[in-house]
Length: 564
Ligand code: C2O
Ligand code: CU
Ligand code: CU
Image (cartoon, rainbow, N blue to C red; front, side, top):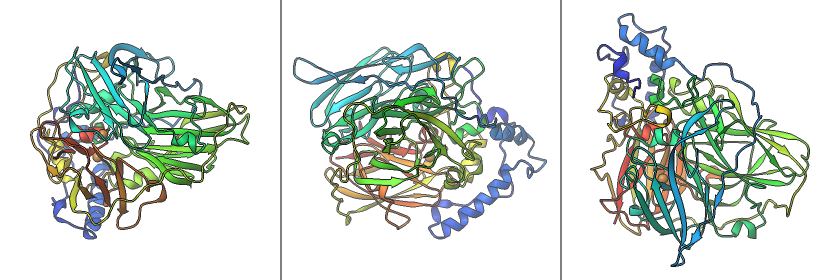
């Protein structure tokens, strides 16, 4: 197995020229903002390449690698040559005890045609890539029988599920290669589009990149009751958005340049595992359930003709009422459900794309964390509108009722410290020991170098043996999450859903006023969220909170909390 280790390209540790060390954790707003801006200007110079001092010999090559953007070839218009796959639904089968049972197997050794004409070795659940859409009824006992067919340990994490820590599928729930496990739980929470993915410590990035991810939809019938589209694959569509990089032979290319440590981005845009596909939709209201399943790339979703759409759900449930928008940032791990009116669009085509330019680079202050695609726009999916079919859904005036959590709760503070000068120094020196482990990914894919101490929360790095926070079972808490780093970080916590109280002191935008489990915290921003902790997690199986950029999570930006 081979991968590009940063320290392999360097002869000796290099200090960062021209920039004084700043202890960011000591700086509070509004000063933090000013200092950040200064730091960024310094960094921009540092990374312009031209400003590199001549003595930074070893760094020349390294910067070349870092700045080498595999996404720098011209942005192609979408091809829309192949149909968007609709993952099969899995409804579960009743076992003797009346428990609805789902069988999942992580599967290696198969190929996918992610990109037309390329045969890519991938991993999937019950198939070559991605996984079935698990349809689960609210409030009913469920059992998942999971078999690990990989050559390495994995877990299956139920992202967004309000269940105890022991069932959560976090890093402490490893399933060894060739082994099986069963988990049983009941989802007593609002209907929502959750998802599942691996979560092994230091290995989540490569395992998701290899193809492991799927939807888990909780159904309670409310969507049908209020008249929303709900016919799977017809007017209610699963849309998993991901980017991938391939090598010349079609193999997945993971963490092969220096800049990938900031977050693995690719130059092929996949929807449900196929590059820039089309989908045939009826000429009526259509509901798209969008998941940003990408390791590191964020999207600013919009239709090419800028038509309005209506946001009907956030990560963990329906909103109270639809929110009309023309573009929306979807960060890693976030889901959003939108409805679009195609009643007068019969015979026409429209394109869902990412208008990244401006918006995406702007929420970062780390110039090299944005590639050519983040500075441009690119197509994701073409909708081909046909005649109306079946019973048409409609846009409801009112959906869920969401009662606000009581806001006079105790506070806990988190400071996200990604990509500061200290981190740069550690990265250049090799920073921490890569987590060793057997084997490689599909087709010999590099597994990268997870497990290093590069991105921190509250000055500490993920350590499986350390409980970072202890929360009282049944309590409600306000978590203040401040981003002192230069990149935007999507903050996620396990075991509960939350409500946003504020962004930089201001009320959250209307489409974020619902249940969420991931929140994007921009560089320099402070977000307040409130959550109730109703599910237990002990020292042996604590919950995680982490950045959902998987290369940040894998390299330290995660912490553990118990709920007892
Ligand atoms: Cu989607 Cu802790 O993960
Ligand atoms: Cu999660
Ligand atoms: Cu991050």
